[in-house]
Image 1 (cartoon, helix red, strand yellow):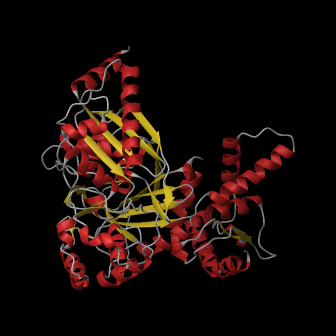
Image 2: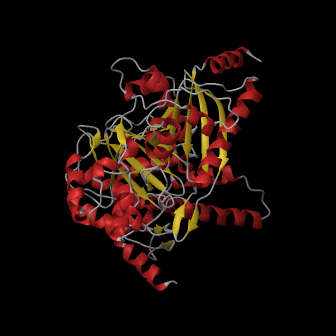
Image 3: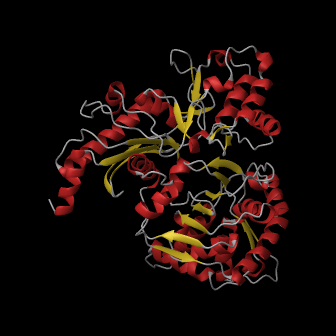
Length: 535
């Protein structure tokens, strides 16, 4: 065992560590880090949601078996790597996919199966609450699920004594505390960023709305307590320790940080929690988050409002489609190469085609495409049809073809981001890019910078995502100095030596994208005809 491994072993034995566990939609991941935020060990458990009675859900058995298996995988990896049993850690944090609905009665029994964020069964509630609050309430938010259950006349609602999210549920069972981090709470119900708590005026409006229903509860009585990053959120109880580590090795009494959502842990993992920063994740789908300096002037269907883990307001644009059609076209070129008897290196193929796009005309030479594999709410489509179209005199070259497919991958998100930048006059100093679009160095960054006219940086070393992010938040709770903000802590103690590559917007590219997006908006009628005509 080398010197580094030896110091890591000592850190594990002394509990100079933090453990973060995140429940993603297909994987539960555990990350153990040291006091310098370096990864010591990882554990994984794969899982899948299931459709039961037309509700996307995970059973309680799925949740606990998954958590226990993930923790055992981590503990066994620690023992294999360092020769020690994992008896304690310095702090623990839990995170999960946001939103959804878990409702419990006064005895702590789950009243209906967990309704995840994937369910689009709350449209009426979403629309009515958005109108009531003058604040966009997406279908996946917990309050939309509760109100839809009320509108549906569901029997269980009268018995609700507590409702929360998946992260809140896990934390409650392990610590006994009914709490949520503010970022996660912001996906349950709107937050007042001045008080960093649920919006009291809107709670009162909601209570008024349902006052004639005769329930024995008020909304404020059945929601979790809101905490911010750095707050102590309880400790692992003896029962909690047994639930987490079925071998009985892990000791109770470990401090726990507020449970957070995957949006918040993603912001931590990309160092984008300070005002005027943001991040964009571009892969199969694409979402961008911008930390705002002030409230927006009105509600927009295209923008979801959440918060950072320390309570700053964040505008989020989420689009269903990004690189799927682009990848499909790259596979056509792969087939062509193979048909010509050539060996294909996919990294080389992607790199060559992506770089070719940089040689194209700034506005893609008049070409137009839509990579809509599925519907796209920002542009008003409930279904999608991938589509490529051009006029006879358009400049149909390989460079322009690749460029238009890269541009259109960001078409819907640009429309959402333009609301922020052009209508709300939001200013960002930088966007942090992550995801598959950025694998070919310089290309994805340049296209995103052209779309949003903001510098785009990509970190040289990608962290371990949200599980690492919640472990960092657990460390922050224990290690922060008096008055040290989360942003300062991340800048000075977590990312200080981080290498990143920054690309500034190119004026010609920006102008070209503006011309393209006007063509894109006009062409939406063609996409509508394709959806209506091609069945």
